[in-house]
Length: 207
Ligand SMILES: NC(=O)c1ccc[n+]([C@@H]2O[C@H](COP(=O)([O-])OP(=O)(O)OC[C@H]3O[C@@H](n4cnc5c(N)ncnc54)[C@H](OP(=O)(O)O)[C@@H]3O)[C@@H](O)[C@H]2O)c1
Image 1 (cartoon, protein in one colour):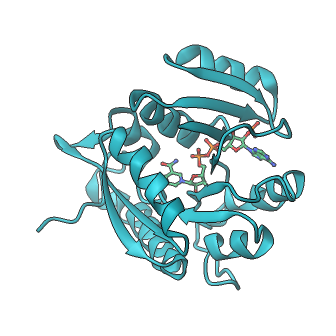
Image 2 (cartoon, rainbow, N blue to C red):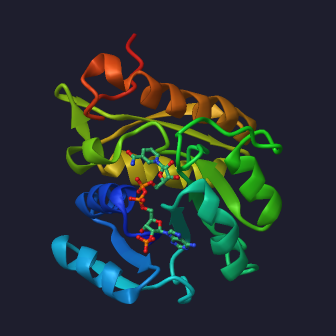
């Protein structure tokens, strides 16, 4: 699988690490080509780098940016995400206070789907912390990745990506469930003071 990750921050590092562990090709696109090159140099496997705005060769694009940067990214790639599986990992929060934001569309993922109607949007990875993605496990158990999308084929692509990286995938249903997933992502942040505050925990379903 040929995966493009927009962003070079914590989640870009975590998802790139897992995707490379799964044997996939990864292209990192940074706001500055030096940033993506620096991250690529730290990773091992089939990893390339470039700048935001570069053409996207693969069929899977992970938007590893804050909610507030989505409009800029979608604007730069207007029409160029058509037909691609676009993975939205965001938890819409105020960047200063970390308070959750109310998104008129219902969720960030639904907003992306409305603004990039040709893209196959999948909500995923928004409940897994960046640090835990480096190993893919917490408490010796694989991370759970909740996925929601209206496109079953795109959802299957994200399932393959996550499972090949050693993660467990739980199908949360249609894209509208992204609202609940974003709530769960926020909940996972909100409880941190009670679990050590190190963002080293994982949301997991046991049965
Ligand atoms: N961190 C977590 O554990 C975690 C867990 C679940 C979900 N999330 C979600 O994942 C997303 C990324 O979080 P993060 O922790 O990886 O953030 P981060 O470390 O701050 O990284 C954000 C990245 O976005 C880039 N960026 C900023 N503006 C951009 C633009 N206009 N166009 C393209 N790239 C832009 C930044 O580049 P510059 O450095 O050059 O500004 C940086 O590489 C957020 O939406 C967050 O809610 C995070």
